[in-house]
Length: 160
Image 1 (tube, rainbow, N blue to C red):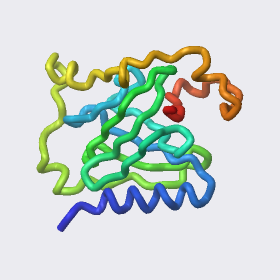
Image 2: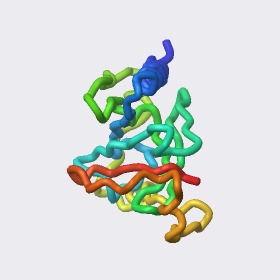
Image 3: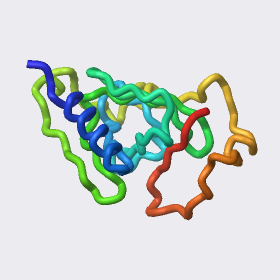
């Protein structure tokens, strides 16, 4: 049987958006092939805002979640294999679900070795198209006023 995680993820994502909530994805960064900005990871996990206004080119596929976003003003491409997706929930009220371990994902491979330098370099992110942000990137008329940092959690912005 195929894993149910991608189907549940898409269903919860749509349900959260239909209720005007902000979907956040909890990712296990120690899984192989995870490409996220590791400088924002804490305790082996990262929480990603995947709301349409925060990401560009979002793909909730059967094998992985991928999108473009800005982290600290730097555009990045994110790739999260479905095996590394731990939960999806709403920022506003915590509504959502944690995903149970599934045999199809446990058989894919083992966790990345924390002491292995090669696995650490595989997780490094690169800047998309060598683009560096300038002052005009963050001062458009569509931008919301900056909010004070809350709890040190990373925030995502739409990649234009």
